[in-house]
Length: 311
Image 1 (cartoon, rainbow, N blue to C red):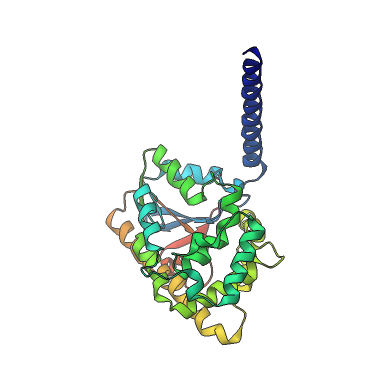
Image 2 (cartoon, rainbow, N blue to C red):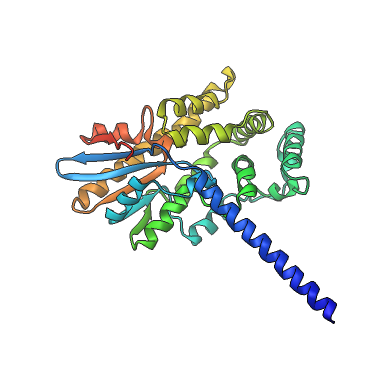
């Protein structure tokens, strides 16, 4: 009996040490990086004023701490808009939209070599992972899931910065809404044919099975706030195959340009209807950069859009 008691105390102490170690490690991770130059814009028209903030949909430690300038903006805002509502019910509904409605398995609808590439990638990430996890997913859902898999496994408890913003705004009793519905956003992906989705998945696997660390590069450009390098990097990740130029154009039109126009129109309507309220609109950073961006459309509506200097 005394031996069991000593063993129990030993195990408890061991577990406590592990807990302390993990806690300290997490704290260190969260303090190692930060957003050096936030993608934050001040938008004005006459006496109206609101802010835009570009996010990055990555679950990494460096994006868990909001920039001080953004925190100030959230505090003075009456309402914060993210791309979609980020409540639990929306997340659950999103999961249902990724599921196919047939009885086929993934290996039945994609090329054999592509299926093998996925198996190989999963094995490299974690030998215990099974491709059966993706059997019922739509092909575009498989591409999205595989692209973020490493980060999700490495930092399972971390949130994308969009969710950090949502949670912080809620804690400050701000009204938090989505500029799009989840059905609108994910419904766009269903506009691509099965063959188009397969091509996109093939390109994703080429990048994921390559030696280049795209996620780390992307994160670096974002943290530094370098819009030119970020745009150049995104363009370098496109298909790069002449025969796929038409599909690339379709991707850009549906996923970016058309959504940017809708976002800008909705922002303009919100501001016109509630000019005395303060707003923050936080979307993926690419919605605010380059041609046919939200910023460009807002300028065409008579707004002044100026990047806020880091303080």
